[in-house]
Length: 550
Image 1 (cartoon, helix red, strand yellow):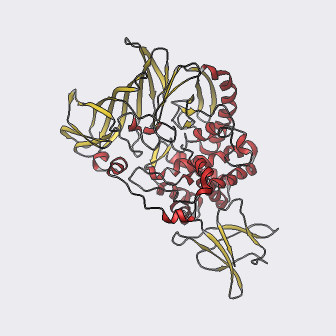
Image 2 (tube, helix red, strand yellow):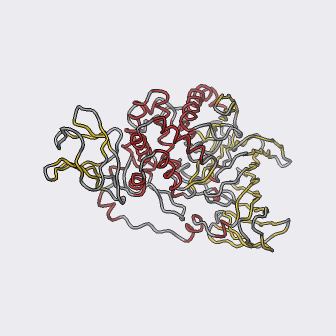
Image 3 (cartoon, rainbow, N blue to C red):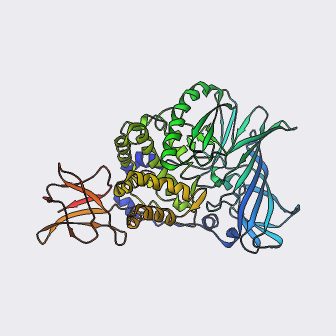
């Protein structure tokens, strides 16, 4: 979760049409392709298990350790690729206890094995590495390690690496398409500090060199960028929630100075969040690993079962209402939004960074559902409508594939607005809820593509929505609803980029009742009695379209 659309909201006035026309076509490097493309050297193995074991030397800002890769071969091979940023050193790679040769190319590492790894076999190798990792200057928008101190001067160090990739601080198969099935995370930190990572704490071991190792086990599939180390002088308190799958543990890790505020603030946000999202999306997807909020020196991130929290115990987004409606200041934006990612982003993960909209559009939309669950449907729709102020329509929501590149920041507000529009078109709230829950059940703990998500909604809705998703996600321009008189008849049509675009829309004679019409890209008569160019209007609250009346 990068919250880019806040930046767009603040700078949108500076964007001009001329600047857009002069914008050069984006180019991608060899390193982009190595990072984003699924070559045979990456698809030849399926990751089953990692054991990441890393020591943090905070004084020197260095890390050292290893990662065990356990995998299943999907084809015969002798060579594979894993990923680690070039500023970190691969000290050695071992296979069956012996070093094996490897070569580096940008941030990719290619390992050659002494024999053919047979298709279907299970095997493993270990990467030992060290160095000075990238320091994130503006987490969570950039990636790397954050080195801060708390109010008492004690070290406070965390990781945040969405977008740039987990290989910025640990070696892995750094592609969204392959989530490890389970993982042991061992983080060693200077004595007196604690580490809080994903999953459940299995063991705390004092080491002889003045360090303490914390072993956290993740029982569920997890994407790489969600893996986290949070190091500080943390204190803990907890709660439980009786949810759809039974008792869910809720664990909170904060700095001592924050304890009183956190005890009051976390409960009044987290419990209603779980109630709302289990209602709309189905059971919390990670009961085995629990639910955690961890105080961090950056704003927030959806680290699976260990959500990063840095909103200073304020409602809104640092006290700001993203919608401008007032509804956004009644709850803590970071707790609700980042927790929403447990369903969309962590449970259902896009296979390619170009489909990050699957994470962000649904999660941004979840904010209005949280409001609806607590203050009613009208309030949720008002909030959703207010998000339009952050839409720039500057570039497509879906990004280019195979180059590790996201689409437009519009994936947040525009995606949320489109999903509310899809709900309006379906015109059956129980069916819509079944679709949202069905997505999380059908694609439970899976990585997915654009086509899988869109085709599922299209099939379950019983409506042809393919061109609607195509227009709003693959093109930057809004469809235009045109009204005009043709051969004496008052007609309408869509002007759109998507081929054969058609979309139902609610229209009415001003002051009357709304009625669905279904224009196409050809003029057809408007089936609304008494309608003309002077009195026609569409449902602007729930439909995000341009309008042309002539």
